[in-house]
Image (cartoon, rainbow, N blue to C red; front, side, top):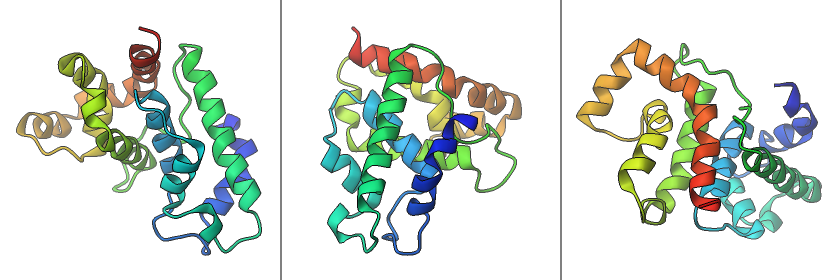
Length: 180
């Protein structure tokens, strides 16, 4: 979590009351950006900022638009470097599902929202391999309704194992799309 202290200003801006109601918070932004980096489809700077903010940057009624833009793009650069290094990714939240609206669940939901926007491209080559790599994120997000997934979600030991695997599967997903 120490790694994210440099993003305090971005966190505050994303949580500002002046932001669009569709704006992602910092944890969601991190998950969303992570998925956009892993994706086989490149997201432009402008599109990424629009998707995170839920509107165009020039529609935000704050003076710190430049700081907001540079914070989002800086976060993307940091996550990209980390994934490229093929090490597990530090997440801006605890791997804990004990609360009903946990941050890790919000991170996974945002990741999956970006993934689902582009799922045809994600599954173009090998549905089974990608599904297996995405399984921890799918389970924690709770977005996919499937009988087998629900059985796994109800098994505490499986969920704990899946939670612990999330940071480790991300570099593998990145490598699958960007270094094959």
